[in-house]
Image 1 (cartoon, rainbow, N blue to C red):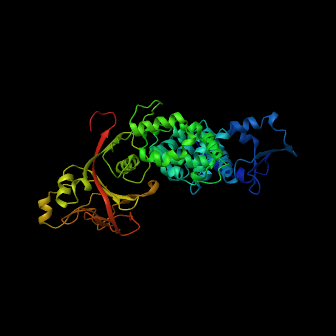
Image 2: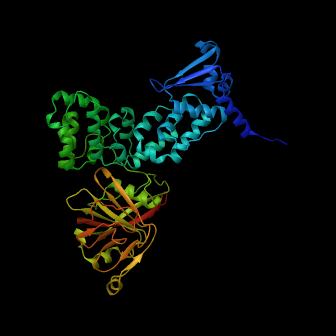
Image 3: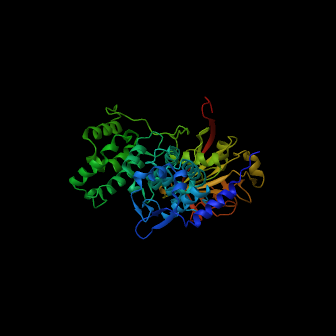
Length: 480
């Protein structure tokens, strides 16, 4: 019978590391004032790491002092190497309370030291346990993992996260230092879920930050030399912009001021297409779209493609996840618009009743803010019943309310207690006990039944309201 005593073996090797009085290797890690020396045994290092097996061969060990082999690893921090040396000696890795930056450093170090087992574990750990940190630090993460050939799983995760919800990435503080090759790879993707004019705006900001000779941001003050230098910076990117998908208004206001960085032939061709509807002479790239979302918003006056993607993810995952479903996609079918159908209680219910799950969205007057709620049950009460009785409530746990601000800054409030959704006369829309209430012109948001307030103020005036039926389709099927 075979018996294994690994815990005691691991503990003994841990003591060997802590009391390394017979060490023959000193490894100095870190740089400047943040350095630390580790005392180790060449036999263990060679047995555990192919990197050290090569590095400790005779031809690599010329740097000795009093018979001790000296190593310097300036690109590995002491906190990261502490994790590595313990793993090498004991096979134990504890990432509890370890900062995300150190875990990322551990990934890079384990790749350099050819610790394949550790590398795979850390890569999976980052994706499964540190997704929130990853999504907040995508620029920093991509700058490191894009250089690691073995890190395709994490690379794919980062790119998919950006394509699904790109705005946090593009408005992050680190965006201006994004590597050219990473940005070029992103801007060429058909599944990058961003409005083309927004992508253009971010490209211009990035290009200016990458062009040191441009000292001002006001394009009206640009010199011909400024335009020439900006054109050199952005020239590889221009062919990837879907200019023909930009509205004439946005092209005039936001692209035309930078026309000197475009070729005259391209500029004239896009202008002819937008103004006279002529057939494009240049290659017209397809509009960007996610393979996992069905987006038909030609009739909406409020929401855009990315709103649909974000809301679809919230419906599918029932939280604020940036993950994207690869099994289902969602179609938003317009049922009601206030400016078209009238802000009338009876008309509203005649349009939205009996259609199943639906999302109501409200554009706030004189603002870029959009608020709304997801009715997970659908409106299922007839007008006569509501008119003659008191309010009815629906407490489906999947109801949620939400808000969007400039650059798609967003909030989601989940139903937690009380009443999730009311149906009743004199109020077109009421989520919770006043969490979102709208009577057809004025509204209010007072947190009660949901875990977050979606507005910083308690009252609002609506500019427009729309309600969409949510149709879920399994990818690969022919019909919704």
